[in-house]
Length: 540
Image (cartoon, rainbow, N blue to C red):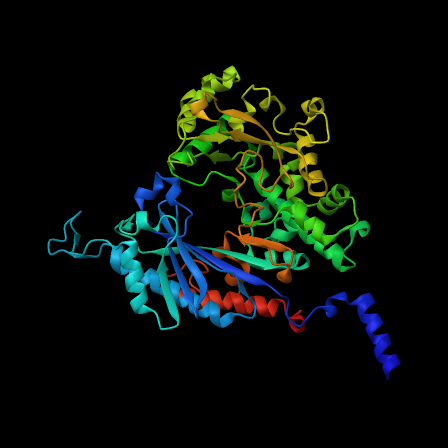
């Protein structure tokens, strides 16, 4: 009997390596809810009030989420919940629902029909108390929640903001939580996870192969990987997940260069950035990407410990991918348009970068777009299209500065395809210099300077020109290896493929996790349970 059992074990190891996994795959899930229609205009012009903890909510003495500001809007950010902590997540979402209800009651202007009913007079504002403050929110939420909960105001900006009012952007609207979900998991499950939890780009899919069934995974990384780099063991499967994440990032960034199949000029790209800045839209790379890695690709490759030529493996993996044929990232990726916004660290106000107009610009570009360039620089905004037309000693090497080990004289040839190659090779060989806008000491008479800094990670973690603290490729908390190498943020979870193709009558047509406060718990727990079942080998 023992010999028979041993023989079966050998067969499982050789031919069914998935069966070696535990019953449930370890994962952690965290949520972010940006509350549309909440407004703290006093924070919009002062970056020092943003991304700072204001209120912390605990359950059974453990933090479950905190409240901060993202621009002028309130954002609720949960802690990560391991797959064993369903009850803790349930209580967290319950408390978040109560926050939304209190804010709606405290800040949204209520209306009632007027007797006249005339055009422009159909709604009349009712009497209401002054808008809620953060101090009020702590008091009211403490009264609403059960004994196991604790609500605390605190943090470095609490004393400055606690008595400021929270107002409504739109008196007609209600608070709608804009969700993002972050999931830590082993890399070998990344492709499958993204296929379920991402939206498919049906328009592009139809252009490519006239099929609405094409998944986001197949779009950037063919399911059939060449034999030389096949996923016959755990390391190969992890490597495929890593390559898929990077391929998706590159393809999404490259798409920004196109408009209805036409490649945009740098003049058009800059106009696009300027329009986005005027509407207070996000300007960095994250706005382009439906899901992104929160950890550096180079760091994950080290943990995978794959003894492979990564550049060759990557090229073999994307060979034949639909989107690669359509948008040609090798030739177009370097023109991806995004921008960084710069703030004074002491005042929190936007920096004025108009002194960059004194640099040596491409004359045709500057003459054509001077008004928009000056408008952006006055707001401390520098975009990649702008840098491509600056003629400083550093920017002449844009978009690919040299590797630390290389002579800078070699960098002149790093354009287009060579830049793409540098991005890929930096995963296995980090150490390229990165472009930054350096804010020097004004009191010492030093001006702005665009130049190089050493960087220990790959060139997409984060991409060029973005500051060190950008969340792309960066995790603020300590990485816990227990739950896997990958930490992926799903930025369009409301359009998740699985949710919109399964039980459509059960979920709000507006989108997953997008409906009113009383449906958040249902959707969040559905996603948690789905992940538990997805990673249960009995259901694979």
